[in-house]
Image (tube, rainbow, N blue to C red; front, side, top):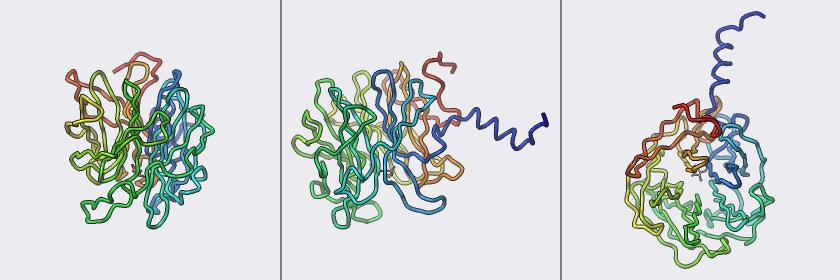
Length: 321
Ligand code: FUB
């Protein structure tokens, strides 16, 4: 066989060894993940802007599954704006959670001029659907929250985005969401109605992308900090706060002005799932999901995330590093 020209040989090597971004045939953004029955379900937004054309083109959400964090099976485009006829555009960040064998997928969508963004919810009996909208309207609408003024002096009508649900050990469910303002409210057991008032949390340079998880006795709230975005976090002894700001854990995403993270534990390892603009045709409007390890210090603080090209190794193999 003729030897490969050096360029092709190098391309082949990097293709075989690189595993971040984890999906290369479509652009995926705003990851959220859940572990169910030994499988990780990864839910992502779907960036479809043309290369070099600014602005999000996002009409549906995608799902992928894996039992080892390395081999991802596409489950398809299993939820789209069509499920929310009251929404006009912008299938932005979303989060899926399971309760009592039912799956609830909270989404950000735009309702149209004057109505701003809203949070909707779809439910299903399986993690891969079929999902449908039990409310036929928003769970959180713009008139339920103030429109903040952002650091650029603009009125933010997109403050009701980026939902992140959490179920505490006592079974109480919560919804966190926001842009510029960070909101939270209790959810009723049916998971499709807020229970009581909407609260706000003040955190340094909060922009968007809240994600809440618990490790040991501590609650963690990670979020996109500043713009372009880094990832910061706060901790609390209670899901209802007060939250103590603990600093930055991730620098700017390569080639993307947003950062959006999900954090899960699977088969004894902790993972930081995020996006960057790392595909050849990638960028801020054409993002791709990546996965790296997350490490806690003994005192519960999170070590800085090191984004890598090689990504993580199979969760079924002993850890080499
Ligand atoms: O993907 C659209 C928006 O960009 C998301 O809702 C934000 O979190 C940011 O990633």
